[in-house]
Length: 364
Image (tube, rainbow, N blue to C red; front, side, top):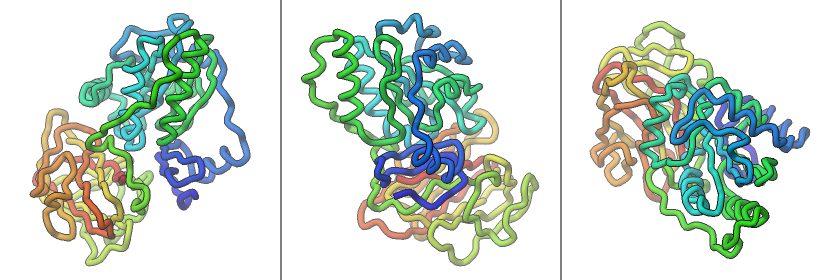
């Protein structure tokens, strides 16, 4: 079943009949229209030609449709702060290594959502941090995205040795089916010894661990004014102007607020003075916050709390058990990973320095 219509770009579809968790550019109504009214247009061989319009390449010299002739290709659309993509990465990374000798070429197409994701240095750091060794096409002008007619992060396109797109999958899940499709295409291309393999076994860590869909009751929530919802600081947001905010005495589930001196911008809220806080009442195993220093090479210390206490064993991979951590770069930070029982909790983050920008909460 689909979640309530929301005007953001990343989407949680994990509990849908399609079994997909993905991000989409558009609105929920548009998603429903595309799936229920307009069948997906299977891409043609010419879509591979759009790789020639990449703005840069990482891990490889530029690749073209001619270079890939005779190869089975898996094209993976991603953006590096997307939690849905992060949870699929262990599988894609393993498939790239497992089937490379049989002729599989995995190409990651990085199409950014936030403006800081257009910075190739940021993408390069993410590629290195996540152990990605397959070729990455930088798609800052969305030419490849448009060439494939894509709408989702993450998305997989399965291309046969003749350069034809034979299948696709949007979002998380269906990993055994996806790997089986890779093996089928390799076998059809005459690559022996692949059809009888068992599916890969994954040992994911940190934000790459699959979501606990049963307990997930909090949606991705944007902080910048363009997409923000459920913001309840008294007086609402004042756009592009420095202002003092406060947190009300009580938050209902999925409401959030800030305190301290902030400037609410299009994509993010920027903290102007040390001691600012963000509070969010959530219901999920994991809580992440996409954030970064406003100035390159800056650092901002912070502390997180659950129901007014340090998280202890419920801390995420980017904080210690006392709740302390440091913002060093623009990326997704895992702040909470709690064990059962999962219940409504009040999350708070206090920034010890000014100069942080907060973009979005995601959950798992």
